[in-house]
Image 1 (cartoon, rainbow, N blue to C red):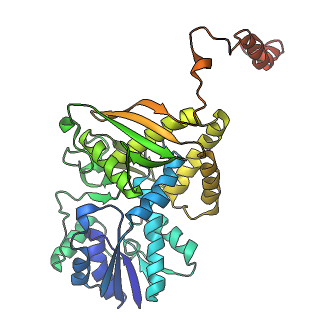
Image 2: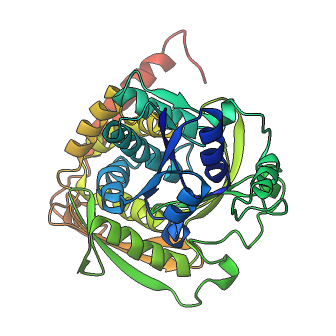
Image 3: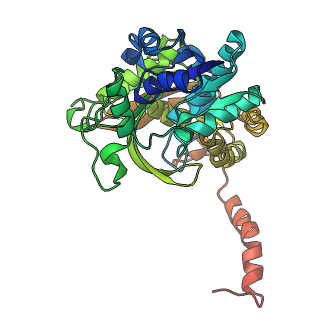
Amino acid sequence: MKVVVAYSGGLDTSVIVKWVKETYNAEVIGFCADVGQKEELDGVEAKAIATGATKCYVEDLNEEFARDFIFPMMQANAIYEGTYLLGTSIARPLIGKRLIEIARAEGADAICHGATGKGNDQIRFELTAYAMEPGIKVIAPWREWEFKSRTDLIEYAQKYDIPITSTAEKPYSMDRNLLHISFEGGVLEDPWNAAPEELSIMTCPLSQAADESEDVIISFEKGIPVTVNGEKLSAAGIMDKLNELGSRHAVGRIDIVENRFVGMKSRGIYETPGGTILHQAHRALETITMDKEVMYTRDSFIPAYARMVYNGFWYAPEREMLQVAITESQKFVTGDVRVKLFKGACHVTGRRSPYSIYSEEICTFEEEDVYDQHDAEGFIKLNALRLRMLADSNQKRY
């Protein structure tokens, strides 16, 4: 039997390589997707092989991740439950897709992931896998093995000399990519506990944020960011640059309790510096370039679209259908936005576009000849007609 394991080098997957090899008498091939973990990938291939894998793919997917996943999602202004910019969620369909592609190339019988049976990632990986290979066998150790906790995994790793970084004192679950980093577990499981300041990787702690504000100009073409402060960068380069800028000003850190797809609530600390800046800048540019009704219609998609991403339905036809409409809505979202970063906040201070439909001449409080204010009386009376009819009927409410 040959199994391709989604491998990160962390606690869970380090144990999984050995467990799958022994439990299934299988040849194990690791696959580690570089989607922006940075230094966390140093030595990961050697570690996988030392743990029992016959080989390990380590692939740089940063550009594809930013270009084909983060940016289309940002065009949708997708945000889950009003706060979460879907940093972990959006990486899973890309990792799952490549996992299946490697399984095909290797002639593997199964794929394996380290997501727990309580979480969302198991759903995201498996929905992606089944959308591409309906008959693929999926091994999910957390739903099969005897271990009940990460403490059990730590003890197993120590028993077999598997190198890990988690400890019983700091058993945080961390997931980092180009868009964000998440922290869950440990002391965070009590939603009353304040998050330790040490949980700051992609942003500096607010107490250490720069004392001087910083202006940043982001340029967009059809809703896609293309330059930062006039410098043209690749998709991943834009994310790296904005992460760097947001980090020193402590922008993009949230502490939330979210509703998982499986039904339970989960508390997490998320840092999304570049994504937070992009979200606010993109939204600001839309305010001067998007028709009112087009914006309202697109905005009505946001809750459903965000749930599709969160719940793992990236490769579902309904998400693809909405994406076509969202792309159409972005035809004229081209221009520049200036933001000021300071002490954890991102303030929009300017926006301009060759396709702006904002008219200073019409909206001015000064004298003008374009808008006849007398017309407003008829407009108001027509909109009030049904309310007046209700008030004159037996349905009078007030």
